[in-house]
Image (cartoon, rainbow, N blue to C red; front, side, top):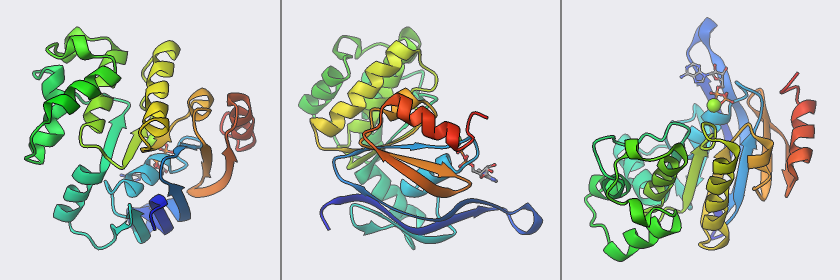
Length: 244
Ligand code: ADP
Ligand code: MG
């Protein structure tokens, strides 16, 4: 099926065993269509990061099935998963995770070097331009603002032309103006380049950039909203007891 970027079917994830077992995801099924922006919201501890890690092939569910671009992740060994992540998936985290000793250009092309692929010069320039860093290619992370560093991380996520970009609170460490720039950039990946973005956030404004917001509570998807405003998202979060 061409239309789906990510598909989770009856995915559960339990950490630990016996008395220490925590069920972080409980029988979650969802389809994320290609070319859409999905936000995942929920109270702290509701399973957002676990959802993202399972959906992105960073972690294996305890049961259930995960597909990215129609490839079944369940049963893949670590080598296969690594290959799939490198080919299909980009990540942006709250901590920018840049290599301090490398320049912007070197940081951005790192995933290609890890995959033993060549950086196409035109494509690199295009990516740097799209994140507004053309003039900073030879800078090191410490010479950049937080927002610029996160844009480097986004460029690094985009360089492999991934099907899906996963973000775990990528604007969590940024001021509101810079956060808006980053969200606009991610939305542009969807609207202009037809990529798929899945974003975990606790910020209703960030969620309002999404086509669909999934609400998680206690490891379940309990609700969703299509094209909500920030106020509508905040209202639903209040009903989930998130800010009680
Ligand atoms: P969120 O991102 O919504 O805050 P998480 O997915 O990080 O939620 O966590 C969901 C639940 O799983 C929480 O109860 C958390 O304590 C637990 N959990 C997450 N990761 C681990 C882990 N590696 N080991 C044990 N418990 C974990
Ligand atoms: Mg989390």
